[in-house]
Image (tube, rainbow, N blue to C red; front, side, top):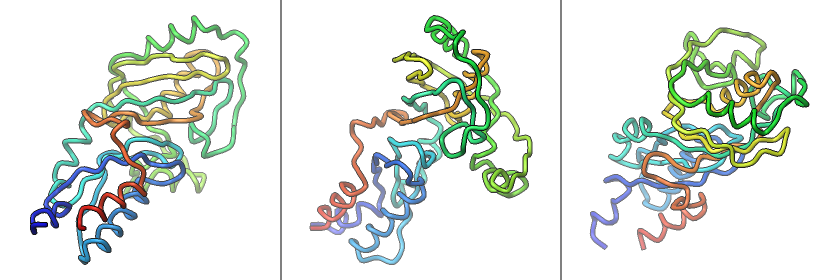
Length: 235
């Protein structure tokens, strides 16, 4: 094996990881960085991800190593695609299952036709307010730190685009969806706003990223498989 082949991860490589449930994006980065340093017998290597996934979300995480970390911003700017489930009739402060239900609402008036028609109204550009339980910074501090202390501050809305919003299953109060959107879109906020638009409530029950730009979940590996690939690359 040539020195160039041995240093492929330092030269730059993209790893597609299927992030497991309850892992943070930084957990994945740290695990792979440690594996790279140990296997390559080096003290330092750059590793970063191109787009955060919440701990309660699974799916595609684009990891860049070495000099490819310079491409992270480019990868982050690309369109994302998600599948998931919205549970209607209840809201939570975090807009997902991280926190307990804080409000319940009627769903008897909701029909499948209403659900599908409402999804169409979300397609296009909009100003979206991020969830308070998010990694957005407020006066230098992560918003979720404030939220967990019970402090509430208004976050600035962000201009986003929902390119497609397809309802793939409607068994009320559960609604399965597939959404393609611009970077920075909070699907949790979509779930919350979707419930409001139906004169009810809503929160995200599950979420999975299946595409980021040209990268697809079908080509992703588990963390263990990535570590095995790293070890094979130096043998």
